[in-house]
Image 1 (cartoon, rainbow, N blue to C red):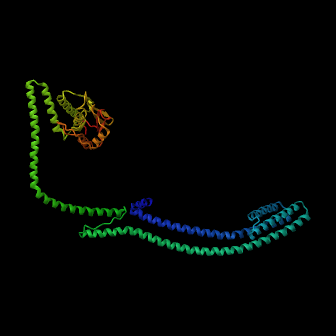
Image 2 (image 1 turned 90 degrees about the horizontal axis):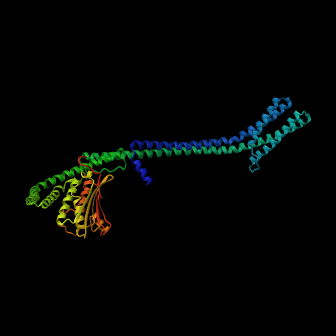
Image 3 (image 1 turned 60 degrees about the vertical axis):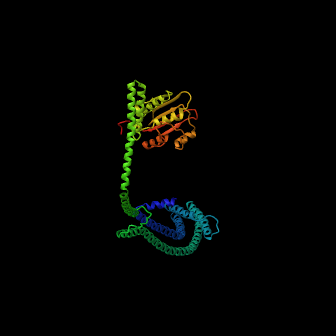
Length: 501
């Protein structure tokens, strides 16, 4: 996955970034090769220098030995403090050279020779010191004897140093030849690496340039075919999202748009011919629809006129209750016919419920006890029409109609946070959890025929709520089971009052 993501990121880079990346990669590779070559050459040069360091140290030791002998002799001749100070400086310098020598017992002959030189040199320095002390004590016989002894020790040390220096020179000469051969071999290796690096860089840049020019060649060939009238040419995707990939994709989209336009034009011509053939049939159907619409308008007007006539007749006879009943009936049906395809307010929905409960109580001799708890400031909130009365109708038909004893329906409207809640509660038969799930999922089909109902079920109410507010789950049912009553809650999100946009 990581390799794939890196490849996708590379394909998304621009041409400038790709070219710069190729140049930087080549430059880094060359720098790396040169760095390795320089390190190897410096390593061999350091080894060549180390070959002669031991000889230089032995030469310095030999010179320091001569300085000690010379300053001792000068002091014996002059006995001056200046010559004594020179002796001390020469002694310290000689000891510094001695500290570099091997002091341990080893099997290497050269290191063993260094140990012998070291021990002889310490003995020589001890004799020289005795000579100086005898001279300072003016003991002529003693310092003469010590001087001769120191001279003999100096000759012995000098002989050993010469011998070791010659042996080391011969050994270092062999090492020098080996290193010189290795240096020449490294030179050939470095030339070969440079040649391979040059070939690799040529291949890398060729691949990079080919990756840029190949899609351009394909695109120019496709453009040539399109210019000749072939719109079915296929432009292969480059797989990258750089400038060339975007150009190829745009060209492919343009071709697809042209092909779709030609196809739509062909289909449009076919449809135009079909429309001409069906024009007479369409006109016939339109006339039939207009006739049915006129019939649908006549029947409600006839119903309202009949109810108004009945109300006037009852008024003339002094039947006030009948007048109120007929007015409620007329208002109820008029609302149903006019408002079903419109939105309305919570106040108008509550008025419709009032009319509906009044009509039911006339039919059932006032058995239904109806209570409202409404926040009057919310009555102007707009909602889909016919959402409250169908819920009350269901509560009557399926909850309290066959209930023995007091039948109660309560309607409340409250503000909860950023939404409103419309609640219809009844003290009827209640519902099981399974039945509630069936109703909310639209799987329940009623087996009760309620005469005189609106014909609008809870599924219709839920559907219109979702369409109106663009949200789901705006209707919920609560019940603790059989005989515990039922509450249907409608959630109104983000309420807006009349006059607000």
